[in-house]
Length: 368
Image 1 (cartoon, helix red, strand yellow):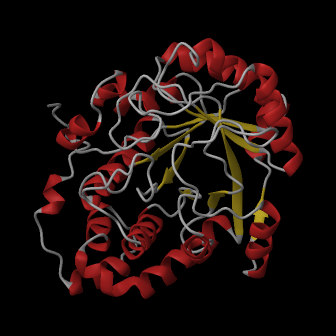
Image 2 (image 1 turned 30 degrees about the horizontal axis):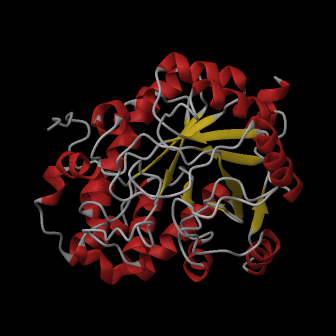
């Protein structure tokens, strides 16, 4: 099993039983740190959700105003060489496999752009002959013609591969470690290149070194003890902030709910715990964008908008294609918030929040 580097290992924080008094001190901490997060993630903090939410909302408004940035995912391919036990795209799943040709990619991108989006996230399975670096580079190039911000959520790559994508117009990468617990990671990734824990762990750093401007981190809640994974995730963020101080980072909170194949998470996370996690991260990472996808239901997303979360996907398809033409029948996971863009924006405005489509950093990049 891989041995965690000292900067990542969260074990010391899990051995201490947190008291209610420690949670109260954490809530009033002037300079929140890892000890603050450990207290706010503890079982004792579950009784303090209202004051946690109030502080999280105040910090969100201080750093991001009343805005919620919107983006949309586009699945390019469902071909995959991986053996993830929890994923609908795993190589041993009996499902129709699809990859968009470049004509179809353009049709999908045009449809998404017509909806008003300025940020798109391109997704594939693990590296395959149908969706390799050359294919992805061309898809990035096509997307960069239409969008100010083009991010990828694909297979880990070498630094020079990320550099070639940056030159094609890619601005960022999203790469979830899935779980930071080595033994669990080994069990959940049964075969394929993704089984290499450290190759995946170090990919965001390679991407930023290769010229991408931001990296999105996260862990798939439900695979391992959520406190372990969230403390390790925080350490990963802090490590990248120190080693890539000029780059932007985001944090996402994907949660196993209705996975293809009927996978049952060994450590299920309910909505109350998820809310606690989001509030704790906002308090301890006040200026880092926090992201919530359409994995979560409408009511929960409405409640989180502007409180801890300031970036969301909407009108999402987890099938290959589906925006500009009929998509494939099976997706990576089920979408729980299936509202259209207009309905979602109306909800935000009713909460006195402003939906934001433009990525201004991308505009400056293109005009520099």
